[in-house]
Length: 230
Ligand SMILES: *Cc1c(COP(=O)(O)O)cnc(C)c1O
Image (cartoon, rainbow, N blue to C red):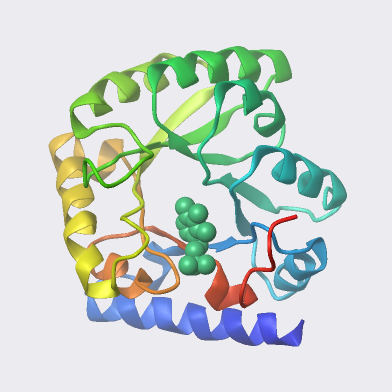
């Protein structure tokens, strides 16, 4: 468990160094510790080491962990997995940042559920900048429609864009995807409208920071290898 604290210190140092070499402020980039499939004790260990933002991929797992860890003040859950509309009801009551909004139909359901649970959620629109080889996220041509839907929804705040390059790529091959997301943000109104760019994982977060990431989603480099999903 102490290893988690050590890992967090190292990752935060690497984040600060990457921001510095990109000419950015170290606090311009936040770490989202991706805790999917990891036990609640690991999340508590990271929390005790000062980590507050955690990323989860599965709706019911998030619901259960949020309940088990409800006593951890100031902990913020990010949902970073594909969200099916029929599972929005599990996520909406507990999530702070929903990073994977990818359709106007999902926004309609989120609108209903935020009203029902009287919640307000920060949203990132997930974009499939790579086209064919990625399975999740909306196509670049659809982004405006989804952004507009989020802006109209009462319980949702539009907070930025997110992307996941194809998983098999090496760090240097992902750079073009990060550049594409940053360019899209500029075309859609820039940081004044879309504050966050969520991009970069354990193997490539430094590249993502170099291209403007404000949120990096790091799992295995914080928690170690993931146990098999039960
Ligand atoms: C699992 C996951 C991560 C973290 O991946 P690591 O390689 O363990 O850092 C980041 N983003 C998404 C969307 C994920 O599903």
